[in-house]
Image (cartoon, rainbow, N blue to C red):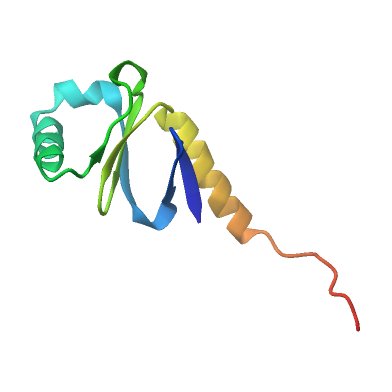
Length: 94
């Protein structure tokens, strides 16, 4: 399934490794170093810095999202719930 993470970006939920609150970036030298290295490799998709609320880490890229961690979590959980629903559509007989 797919998750809309804001700024017209949609990613596959299976590719998500982690979703981190943006405010934690400055408190962790490991996160800062990882983002610095990924920027050198042009694998960071940035948003306007004032609007970033979360960092979405996937297998190939790091995304700065204007949506909160909570909102992204709800969207991811909604997709897993939808996957578990049974299909009750009636099959048409021909």
